[in-house]
Image 1 (cartoon, rainbow, N blue to C red):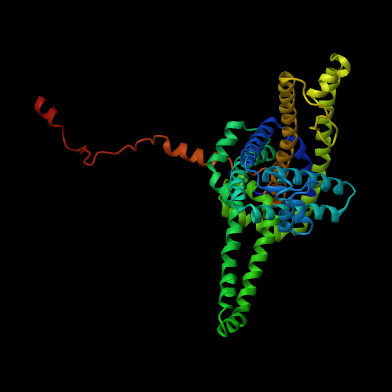
Image 2: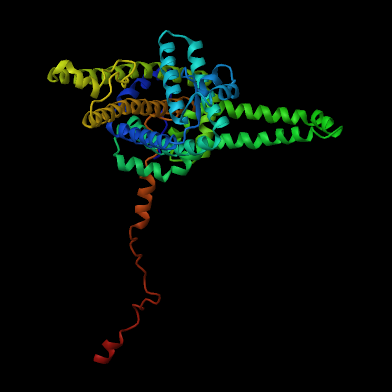
Length: 438
């Protein structure tokens, strides 16, 4: 869809309040369903793969990941605790560690504590490095499935958010999923293409290091070609910064422009380097607003569980001992606390399991809100950055209507042109029939 670009007004600098529309957009049922589907697929994959437990946990509950982030002495921890400790799954370890760090980052954001936010964010990145370093095969399989599911559902959420923000439309679930399936290749390859480029450039530096092992010739080669290695490292740094800062804009680019992964990378990099401070301001504003919204959603879920359990408590007898076995009382920081009493029989165990499943659904919807808010907010940020950098109207989004109209015009039958006879009869020549009749 092509529209005339609107002139920029002085008040256009105050577009950041548009970010506050993310909460209303992210609680749309269609987006929550898509986010819940992605979350369920990722968790199911992790739980199934966790049947093979490989993470060593000490008697004090300290895992390999905790040791890796603290001091990096993972091999010593494994040696001391492998026989006496217990084993846990990689997904469970990452989930528990990430949940703690996420809530610690939210607390630091509320204070505000920039150092605490940075420290917890860096710890989450270190957790990914730990997973690939010490459990490479597991991580490759798990993160490949996670990337595919999050790209598919995230692309659908971004498409809904783009049409909703730009034109006020609310496409259905089927339409959004159809778009994500059609653009699945671009959605998946956009985040990993910069990483592949970095690895390809890094091969040159790696080969130069191999040449350095050669006696005499190696030292001279390193000294001679070091400027090329420095230029390659500078290019890697530029790509890495652009990827980290512009990663959030890649899927919204495809959702808005219906383009490929290279256009997503190009636009995200150009917007970050053209107006880095504005990009940072929008991101911080969305993060602060998202933290407030998450606290409200978590409080709502906590109130939901407490009200349900309170009215159930009125109906149970015997001082609610059975209810305590079926459903331990949740608290604001832990919706799924462990019960202190063992179930009395199989029916109590079955009831406790069913209650656990439904509470997990509530927790899943709460996490789905975080996923939906992330994609919705970044879709809005992409529209604002495109408006500031490319001077593109906020209501301009690709819908395919122009191409469909053009195809319809071509498919319509064209009227046939009227052709005159090649040899028109001479008006001065008498008609043969008239002469014969005479």
